[in-house]
Amino acid sequence: MHAFVDLSFSLTGKTLPLDHGYGLYAALSRFLPHLHEHKAVGVHPIRGDAAGNGLLRVAVRSQLQVRIPIDLIGEFLPLAGKVLDLDGHPLRLGVPRVLALRPAATLAARLVTIKGFTEPGGFLEAVRRQLDAMGVSRQAAIEIPPVPAGRTHAGEPLRRVLRIKNRTVVGFAVRVLRLAAEESVMLQERGLGGRRHMGCGIFVPIRG
Image (cartoon, rainbow, N blue to C red):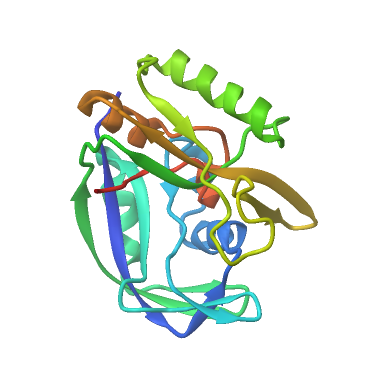
């Protein structure tokens, strides 16, 4: 299996939709028409500041990051300088940086979707089966973080949705703990569940 890196582009713009997984994939596909063929590629959700009305405000830390095999870097470099149209929200991409994947004992994914599993119990079992198939030790623990304090239904699992045209896909935020270094890098490379092109199943290190 090829080694993976994160290719990180700076962003210039004002706002973007909070639920932008499908819109970002569609915008990238206009410049990378063969993106759908690269099943291993993951597109990170873009981080920003809450702006209300279902929007995020582009912040200094906002970046477009794609997780790709090293041998695909050349295909993505031409995105530099391009303007993505995310449902009417223009975002200009800067010159990218190449970031190596770093092992960490705890990894988190903002949203993991597994077809047919929309309830916490069955979903966690499906996650465990995928980790087992990957060869991740049973010492690794899986968590669905609770809804943050101050929101409705505090203490319940953090359920999230992804809208794809007229469909709504349900999934959960996931953390995996007590990973060995090799397992951590492998999980970052392979991810869990589907829809990696739309920001799902992509794990990043949690420090502390």
